[in-house]
Length: 234
Image (cartoon, rainbow, N blue to C red; front, side, top):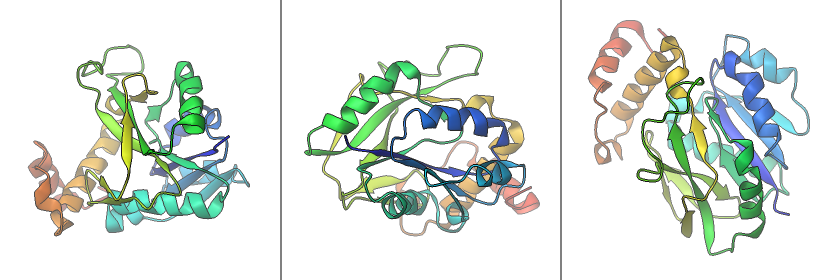
């Protein structure tokens, strides 16, 4: 057995917390790490009341300060520190789920995938809502692979403040038969989506080293103006 840590950054996700935690507890056989940016909607109280040797909760606004790449590296470091017997770390956001039909495949991959691969990329399905099965793209044509599952003994690092990229890794195992990440971002409330938009505009502007290596989002100018007028938290 090669134990798996589920790791995630949270911010004001109280409507997602109970369902997300229930889903992740069926997958994480090493433990769960939550790094909270500073929630004010009850998310903090939810996780603090449940924190134990299996569920670790940390307050740190590393995404706001340093961006998504640094936040991924931080989650990996915490996973190694808090769960030293763990072999893998998997990032799953608050608005994402792994369905039960993929649990067996996930366990098989983490326990038996050969060492030539130290990253597993999972196809992401962008759900339009929680009430229907339509997705923005057919994953068989456009898998939207997410390099989220990494061996904790690998020296790999994530770089870039936005649209983080991997460096220093061996091969990535990317197959359509891999477990799917079901992404329900389109059912998130508008206030949260506006916060993410402002945050992404901020991080892109601050990424002096890598910012020119990825294009501007089609709504980025809109969120830049919102950031100027309302600040990051609105």
